[in-house]
Image 1 (cartoon, rainbow, N blue to C red):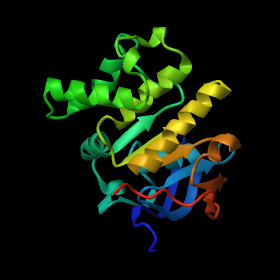
Image 2 (image 1 turned 45 degrees about the vertical axis):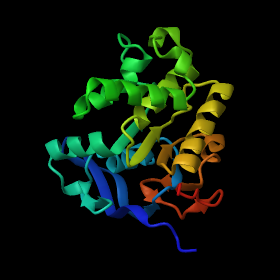
Image 3 (image 1 turned 135 degrees about the vertical axis):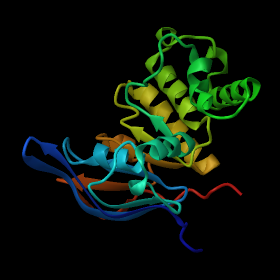
Image 4 (image 1 turned 45 degrees about the horizontal axis):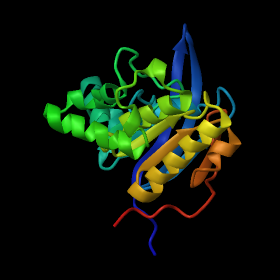
Length: 239
């Protein structure tokens, strides 16, 4: 059986920031591929560059040098306005602290990314309800964030991330603010999205247990990338 096609190609990417007159390096000559349907964990100590790399892949930042191809599109070359449009169409975000709107209920929070599309109100609502059902929150659609537990809040955030059927899902410490049981539930849900729906997932985590739920792990150390470590065989994309 042939290897899955690369969805993401990171070609000799470096990133630095300016601090006054100084140039502070964060990533150095990073190059690797991420296959379609992969579930990859990025690990490393604080300051290793893992969140910077995730932000580059998600189009939240652009490299100082190098290219990042998602499909045939080099997102490192896109102007800011085009990059924002690309993110809205292709990336679902999951954050450690949920980033939900407190004045919106669960359904409205999940529906929010669809406001940027041409979908009508009824179809937006149907898609949001489907996403909430997928994460097991059909009975919480009218609840506001302050009425939900941490695990439920993160499941709302996951529903929001998948509601637009994105090309890839990026998760930055998705279990970092959760108790062990809620964290296990979130990891099981991410694994299901990868295994059953064939979603490509890239997760930053400092937690070895969380990383063990991924299909593969890469470590960053001082801005340089380690070899790929396979946890389990890659999930097959759905037929």
